[in-house]
Image 1: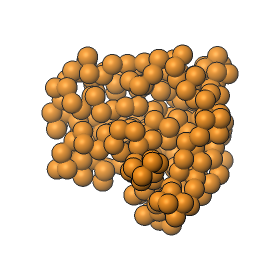
Image 2: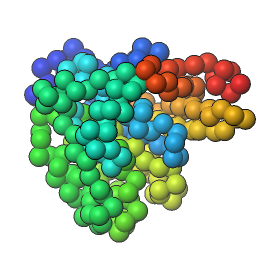
Image 3: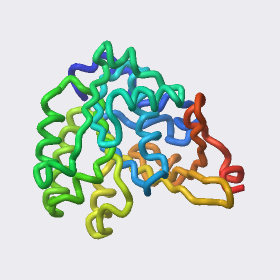
Length: 237
């Protein structure tokens, strides 16, 4: 575990800050995990990663976010709209946010990301939302696998890394070994049921939390409330 984390002997998991969600995750996500959050567009990848990011900040972890989805201003506004206030954490520098356009970096995107990860060794949690564009502009399979191997090395030192990825970004021959390499794999689905959009989270794998593996969770994202776990029967109507 990271030597700089004073409380890591007391906390073994990162809480999402949502007790109902944590219970479906076997108590939380283990510290030092490589976590893949996978799903199609609009399935809730960003919301889930923001919820986990916020939960980590509530437990005094230091977080670094690389986002291709937001500016700092739009991120603050978006998270405030679902009752996840990060402004104080930004001002106190517990949260560092780096807007990036990975697609413009081409084949160098993953090398530069790893260098950025290592540039701030005091960060306990690193989030990349989304990693998809880094995989679709000039990177080959060996570079992508090499990136995940570098992430695993950092996780071995106690850093927790969360990567969001569009399901169709990679061929299954590459995606399957990446899923196996990750300590936690959370898969999101979004389906239209008549007039309503049904969102579900499948806990495909969490290291050390066998009871959570295979769990399927329905959820809604409500303005002013945030991510709310709902019964599957209600989610599916």
